[in-house]
Length: 214
Image (cartoon, rainbow, N blue to C red; front, side, top):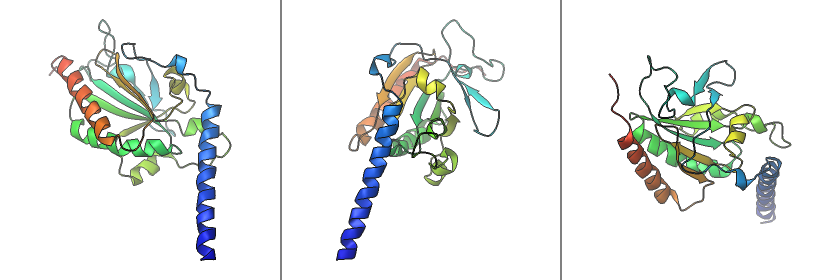
C-alpha cells in the first residue's frame, strides 16, 4: 500500500513538472493575442525546411498565391491548392490530441487539391530550460502513425509571423492565399465538431478552385 501511494505521488510530481515546463515555455514565447491573424487576411509567405538536416525547402507560393500572381513553379506545378498548416511541438500535449483528427481528415482529402503541412517548432524551442531533450518530430510522429508532411521552423520565424505561440495553431488557406479558418489550441470532447468543421471548409475551398490544368 505504501509503495502504491509513493508511486502515485511520483506520477503526480512528474505531471506537475511537465505542466510547469509547458507553462514556462509558453511565457517565454511572449503571447500577444492582438497580433493574431484573422480570417480574410493574406497568409504570410514562407519557406520552410522539409528536413532539419538538409538544405531542402517547401514554399507556400508553390501552392497558393494572390489572384494576380503566378505560382512559384507553374510549369511543374500549375494548379492552385488550398493549404492546411498546423504549428506543433513534440512537448505540446494538446497537439498530440489534435494530430489524430488531422490525420483522419488528411486521409480523406490527400488526393484532392489541398496540401497538409505540420509545422514543427520543437527545434526552435529546444534551447529553453527543460526542453533540451524533447523528441525529434520526425521519428516521434512516425511512431504515432502520423503520415502528414512535416516542415521545420528551426528559428521560429514563421511561427512569429503567424503569431503561433499558443499550440496547436491551425490555419487553412484558400487557393488565393487568403486565410479562411484559424484555430487556437485543442480540448478533449471537441473531436467530432472539429473534424466536421475542417471537412466542411475544405469541401468549400475545393469547390472554389479553378479546374486543374492538364
